[in-house]
Amino acid sequence: MGGGALNNRNRRALITVGVIWAIATAVAEYLAVTIDLHPFGASREARIIDEAFDLLLYLAVPVFTFVVVVVGYSIARHRAGSDDELDGPPIRTNRAFVAAWVVVTSILTVLLIIPGFVGLDKLAAEPDPDMVIDVQAEQWNWTFTYVGSGLTTEDTLVLPVDTRIKFRITATDVIHSFWIPAFRIKQDAVPGQVTETLVTPEVIGSFGDDPVMRVQCAELCGLGHARMWTKVEVMSRADFDAWIAAAGA
Ligand SMILES: [Cu+2]
Image (cartoon, rainbow, N blue to C red; front, side, top):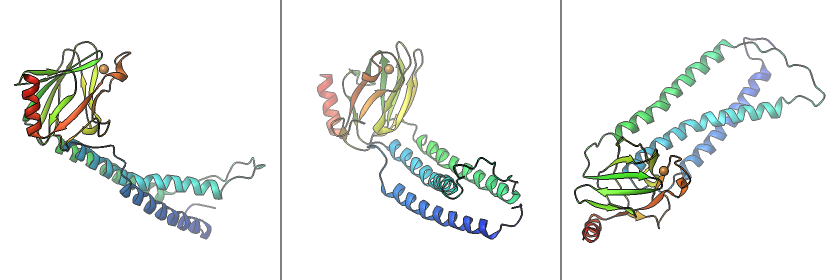
């Protein structure tokens, strides 16, 4: 075998692999579209991030199936016999293949960047909050102060639905991380600094509906780290106002 034109055997192998790849990709894309891989999402940010995740998944599927099919085909069809200890024939470069590889992977890389940029732009699009909540992390609990009402709670983080909320986050002792899985937001809580993150809850619900509705520390912070979590509850604006009035009384 030399370089240059493909012989018939290689051409047949290429067609076989191409057909298997197309079928595997179609099946995997179908599964990627129909199976809901996301945990419960309850915020505008969760929608944006899940959209970006889905797009990246759809782009990654053909790459994944290509690698699996080529490796699988090579193992199945070109396995050496158990007593064959010879080296294989030398492999020479194929300029067209290398050029195509560089061009295709470059295009894919650029495509992979786009959902990230678009998503970040959307996340940053609404910088003005309707409500500010100060978050203080310490070993090993969370304290929330509703700025304006002066209400402070260490229990459930209660939030009104469809409201732009800014969290101003800090820590008293070591670095923690403020993470609400259902909102897909996470921000470090750093002693001596105030970090910020914005979120708009869009779904009424609570920890009882799904355990991802919680604030969970996401930065290893000592013995109590795993238990450093508290419930999140999103309620209607009217219920929230009533809750604030009752809790502040
Ligand atoms: Cu912590």
